[in-house]
Image (cartoon, rainbow over all chains, first blue to last red; front, side, top):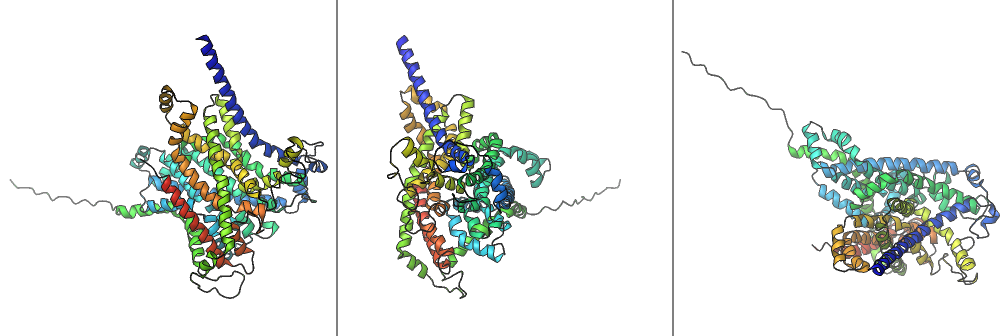
Length: 285
Length: 314
């Protein structure tokens, strides 16, 4: 009996250790590429060409350099901030209103809307629609403008955002809505006063998903803009060829860190709400 | 005695519009979403369908003419289109297993972590790639694979000594390794979100099922095969179908990795469509539209098949 118990305990300990080793292996796989690019951004320029992982000599000036010396970069940064925030606001507004209507309002034809939203997740909308999006933008005079990117950007995650909000609104008990109606609340009052405070976690998921997508979008921006001054950061970064002059490797790495930091920061700040939103219903969309 | 006759009092009721009319006003809430959905998704797709029946050349001054199915006939005889579809299929077959199996196993492991703080730490780390925009993932990995400064070959040659500088893998530049290279970082990118997807699915499985199976003598692998995976079937279905679609329609990654090099394995039907529409000659958008729709329809056939295979069995 003693031997048996000790044996079982040991096997369980080994299993636990193996579990954590495997998980930590994946944690390393995830963190190492990001660590590498960060280290590259604080290496001296000669160091960058040795291929060695750890810097021989640190150089923290690359961040200031890129913001001062690369002519359009501050403007590109502002372009990205502006387009992303506008997209996130508009898409989230559409998603909240749409999700609410689909769940808690009598909506003739709602089944058709749902079908359209779900079908758009399976159809390669972005690729097929690109030719016509270009045409629409040209007709509206929005080619080669920063603001013009906002309209097509909203659609990037519109369907999934509405479906997420719909799933979140379904978590709100019908009785709550009925009670509000009996008290004389109309649909708008019910939305703002009753349901909005309850959907915070789901809204965070929608905000983060849209922020990440809009912040890093490449295809539409590369297609719909030509001049460097109106472009967003990802297009500038993707078209930069590392190794030469102002685009020396440590400098391009610094730009990269500037581009990915906001998404990670936003996620770090909101991760508690993000996880709760995911588990509450976002993943049931 | 006189009899008093009282006249019944008529009371006007407040006007109430018919229920149908009241319900229709609820569509006001859908207007913002419908504006974007119809204006920038539905209309463009239908417009491109229309364009695919014309000889529209964007840069040409001649007006487009209706040519019926000519673009489709030409496309169906175009070896570049078939090569493009085949390349996209190859990529999908490389990408799909890894992006399903690895997150599933990782989710099962993380789900078993008892220490709450540690579990939270793992989930946060695992989800970091998911909050980095896709194009930034592509740029990062293009550097990681770089022959000159990339750490991957540095590790393979200088640290592990698996290769010499002369025999080191060529990951980029349209070599045969380019598609696997893209598939690897796509799995890396999706690892976090997919793991969370599976964790949510695992959280919904009643613990009693596991207890009952253990009492019957099932080991961990049997639990995985007979309890976990069947219960995760709906999650698997959604993930497989959605990821099939995104994999077949990859374009940003291939543009950033391979540009418009026709010999590169990254020159898929999506890149070909883009090349025709915005780069080649007078921007042959009519023909490009046909290519786009053929690719989309080919995908839809497979999606329909997958949805049928994964249909609810109850």
